[in-house]
Each structure stands twice: as C-alpha cells, then as structure tokens.
Image 1 (cartoon, helix red, strand yellow):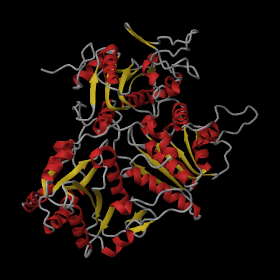
Image 2 (tube, helix red, strand yellow):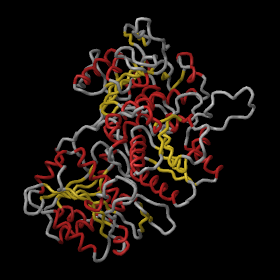
Image 3 (cartoon, rainbow, N blue to C red):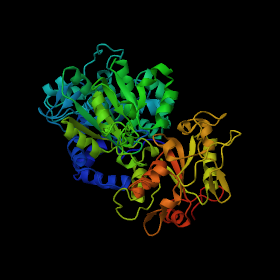
Image 4 (cartoon, rainbow, N blue to C red):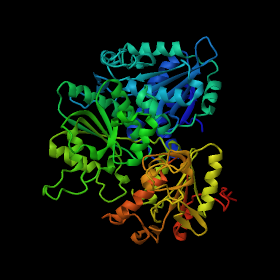
Length: 638
C-alpha cells in the first residue's frame, strides 16, 4: 500500500498546463478515469480558481522545481488533500512537505473552535483543524514524515486579510482540563487576500526549496504506509489518554460540533440533537470514543451507550476499566428512570439498534404504554448524540433511523444538526467496495449491472467451497492478519456440549464448524459470543451478525445462507432462517440483505464470499469477482 495522487508535476510544468487553458476540465476527465465517478462541480471550480493562486506564489518565489501533488489520497482512507508541495527544507537535503487546503470563501468568522461562513450561518469545521487532521494522518501512517519537516497552510485567497487574521486558531490551554496547549497554530498557517499573500510566499520560502524535489516526491509516493490498527486495539489509550485517532473532515466537524454544543449548553443555550450518519467503516465509533475520552478529561459528564451487548462488553474489556468505572459504557435500556438532562452528553453509538421501547412488556398492573426508547435517550442528556447507519437494522424491534430522530426533534421542539460521514476508513479506504455491496444487495440504486472492478487496496474473492474460503483466510492469518468467518443465521445455534466443547452447528456438505459460543463466560479458551470478534480464539468459530456488527478485522469470510438466493433477482426465504427475531421481522427481505451487508463490510483489507446456493455463488463469479481454487489459492486468469 502506497500513497496515490490524481496529478503530479513541478510548479513550472503545472503553470504551463494552466496557461494552456482547459486545465480543470482535463483534470476532471482524469478524475473520472482514476476514481470512476464525476467530480463535484465545486471541486472543479476550486481546481480552476484556487490552484493557480498557489502556483503563482511558487513561481514568484523562485520555487518552480518544487513538486506539486494534486488530490493526494490520505493513508487508510479515501480522503483527498487539495495540494501537497514537496521539496527540500532550505539549506538541507531533507524532504520538506507543505499540505495546502484551498478555500474559496469570501467571509469567515470564528465561533469557538469552529467558524461561520455567514453571519447567521451554522458553525462549520475550522479549516485549520481540517488541515491539522491531514498532518496527523500523514505523520501517523507514513513513518518517514514523523519529523518537523511537514506543515499545513489554509489558502483563503478570496477572504479579506483582517477576517482571516481574526479566525486564526489561538494557542491556549483550556480551563478545567488536562488537555495540552492547542498544537494547531504551531503547524498550520492561514492566509487570506491582500498583504497576506506576501506572508504566504515568505512561508513557502522558509519551508521549501526546489533542490532534489523530484527525488523526494518519488520517495514519498513509494513510501510504505503503515497498516491501520483496529479500534479495539487502541480503545484504552483513546478513553484514558490523549487523542489517538486522526479525525478527518466530517469526523472532525462532528467532534468539534458536539464540543461546541457542550459549551453552548453551559451558557444556557437551548437543547439540540446531533445525528451523525455514515455507512460501514466511516468512523462513527472512532468519533464516539474520541468524544468520550476528550469530554471525560475535560470533566464533562458523558456516557457512551449502545444496544449491542457484544460491543459494550468488548469496550469494558479493552478499555481496561474496573467494574465501578464501567458506567461510562452502558446500554440504551438503562435510561428508563433517568432524571431529565442529568447527563451532559449521551453518545448513542450504533443508534440503528434503538428499540421501540426499553421494556420488554408492560407491568400487568400498569395499563400505560411504555415510553419510546428514543424519548428516554433524548431526555436523559443536555446534548444527545446519535451515530447510526440506516442500513444496519438486522432484527425485529430495531427502529433507529435518521427519519425517527427527525420526527422526534420536531415533536419535542429541539434543534437538529445532521452530519453525514462521506469517507471510508475500512475496506482499504475504498468506498467503491461498500458501494458495490450496496448495489449488489439492491440497498442502493443499481446504476446498471454491479460488475466488480478490482481495487488496489482491497482484495475480494469468491470461494467454491467454505473449505477453500477457510484455507485462504488461514494463509492470511499466517501473515499475522486478523481473520474471521461469519454467516447468515441459517443454522440452529445450540448450547455448548456437556464437556465444554461446541457443537458443529454450521454444516455444509462435509464442512462442519461451530457457531460462536452461547455460554455467558469463557469455556476454557473459547470466548463468549460478545468477544468473538476480538478474542484471538474467536477465529475457530463462525460468527453471526450480532457478534460481528460494530467490529472489524483484516479479512472477512462471509457465508451467504439459503435465506438469500438469486433467481433473476433476490429472493429471501424465511424457512431457511433460524433466528426468531429475523423470521418475525415485518420487512424480512430488508433485514436479511442488511445482515449480509454488515457481514460483508467488516474487512479492512479484504473479503471472501461464498453462497451456499449454487446459482447465487455463480452470480458472484459472473459479476467478475475473482475465484479461489479448491485449495484457497486465487485462480490466475489466462
């Protein structure tokens, strides 16, 4: 895995290309070839209007040999940086990198750690914080960039200098907290129009020379990118220590906006709900845990809640919290008797798992209807935060959705801020894979036949048998990768045997394997189902959607059972499903397709699919998914 960019030239060559005319249109055509989609018109406008303002300064400073990378894809994700300038640090042979974030804004006003783009506009992500996130991810995942020879610049070429000066981040230590002095001003500069163009030019001269620039950019683009660590491997540091995950673009906006509301609520501001919406791998739980850790260090009473026993029990384990501190991680159904607004911030993670009510049934002596669970969660906190994915409802009684939150906000008279996470941090940072899964399962508009196109950073195969899948994954495990096999709920889930072993419930021809354990605690080395996805011994059992949802591993094996088959269109078969909650779901078809979407999107580096139904497995092959042979080795095309 290495860094990729849309365009690479020296500043002089780029200037010539711009002077020749039609540069932005040519770049848009190249974008379509590389990313298989049409760029946003606002992005093309930025290429035409903002890039020349930086190139002009480089040439004016005599830095024509400095290399310019356009739309550099950040490590571990599909986030792209506007411009990255590469050269040597003046009077040395050391590489120097300047990340430039272009903004065409004409007006800007600070609002705490955020900014407003109009006097009555909503708070927006501060561009310096956005650029700081890019520096963090480059330093964190490209080992050669760990020293001080990397910085960032926000290029606000249309904004008046006095407004930009007022919006520059301030180096200050926050009160009542152990948080360090804000590091952003040290590493990120902001320049507007007028006299600040000369300041920008002077900064370029202090940070760059054209010496060995071409050599340095080759080294940078070929540099190995460190593999992303799973969430649970760093959860203790996240909750107890300082920020450990770089928050990029909408992630950082969500993080900053919640903290903005906390400050607002302390000043008597009205209640507002935050809904953070994103598909698999967009970093919802990273935001949740970073918020929890930061707020706790600032002495803000914050609670993390889910509707998932697996996720919460795993957090208890990996956060390393003693029993008396586990109240920071709890369940949605624990707020039935909560005092309104007793909690400052309630972080409802996996909010698609919100149930209709927290009570299984009403008291026989109480004829009143129990209140909706969503009402209890909203009332419990001054700042209620919901993180969810509408396509992850996988059982009867789950009602969490963005529409539900919108309706409740209107009913209760509260404001609502919706933030959509657009970028992918799983699947090798390739949103194309998640989009393909959605199209395949008809959970998104098909846009034609969902033919698979291989990706550089994510591997996908179809297996002829479950044994072939298992052999492929064992080979990845031998490379010290974390692997799991999960399946649709098409086999009964039996209790452990009397001798403490697990019955081989999942049977396909001669292949037989146990489900994850039904026991509440460990059976020897066998973990209980809530810890299946994270305990190393979980590799020996087949997981279900309830033990896989919310987690990630390097390679995901997925067995599609006969509850979902292809017959010139998807057909769902209740009779083949063994889960009572799924069988009795009103929209069984959607629940089953959501289930396989969850299972297929757990992999960070790759996935292997196998359908128990022969025609369905053949569909995957016909769609161009590469095939494994019966030994789990990729078949070489001839």
